[in-house]
Image (cartoon, rainbow, N blue to C red):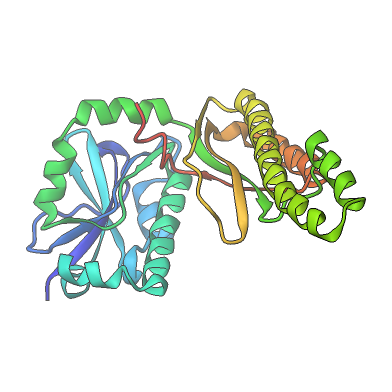
Length: 287
């Protein structure tokens, strides 16, 4: 039976995992560029004690090519062959379990390394040599990017409000409320429909103000900020979704600012959700 590999990449001298090359395995890679500082535990300690496992509980190993290395784990070709994988990804339970395992390895590698750049989950490589070819592509640029990300992590901060906005303090809405209270039933019905439209536009303006204020508050405590495209999240409206790059030793300050923001916005009907530090999912790909 053929097999597949999931990868993470880093400086060749810094990947303290067993090295193997060759074999006829097909490799499905979700690689990261990774760098482990000189203060990291010796190779034997990490390979024996870290016990990194990838998809389907398969152990993580290392491939080295020039200045970079890829940490990989093998999985069955029968499960991850392209045509089979295209069908499997429609199964959200199956996909979520493996995406979580992939992310767990990313997070663990960030603990071991001072720089990690994750690549896409589910990218397929036919064998180890194909992974090494990938490592040779733009090696100098990747090494430079690792240097830029050394000691840093990525946070994702989301500001949300419920689908139904809180009471809107808007002059036009307040005026319509007063008119509705003194109108006949027929006119009140028409005014209520107008009020719903006016209130929605007022809520949108409030959302934009909250997003701008939240971003202005978070940017000074991060080195870089990237506002993400907005999408719905169940019954909640996403007001702001921003990726932040910061030094990991600055995490207490950043976390405190996020907590303060959440407390300030709660009384206005907004919630703040934050995760991190993660490997540089967003900033590893940005110029």
